[in-house]
Amino acid sequence: MGLLLFLVGLLALVSGALKLRPRMRDALGTPPLAVAEVVAGALVVVGSAAGLSRTPVAPWVVAATLLLVVAAVVAQARRAGRWRRSREMSEAERLQSYVEFRAGKGEG
Figure 1 (cartoon, rainbow, N blue to C red):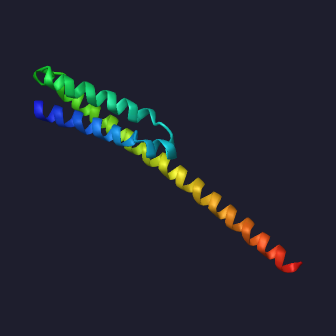
Figure 2: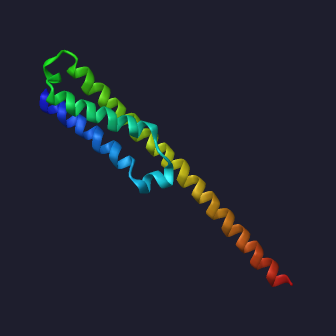
């Protein structure tokens, strides 16, 4: 159980850190669940080193950490989808205004 606890904590830590990279933050902002993932991952890794795996709480910690990772992934996917849709809409609006501008020049 100790290795599983360590690996789940490491998974949460890496997953949250990847979501907090500067490139991701610039495009999507700072996701609060990613910050929670990093904190929970660090606590679980430290807890696994401190002997948390020998307590009856360990399976609950693993389940809660995995649920946090899944929730953060779903939230990030939704946020990325909204960003992509708004980007596509703005590109369509720019293209439409350019076509209208070019069409207006051809008439005159």
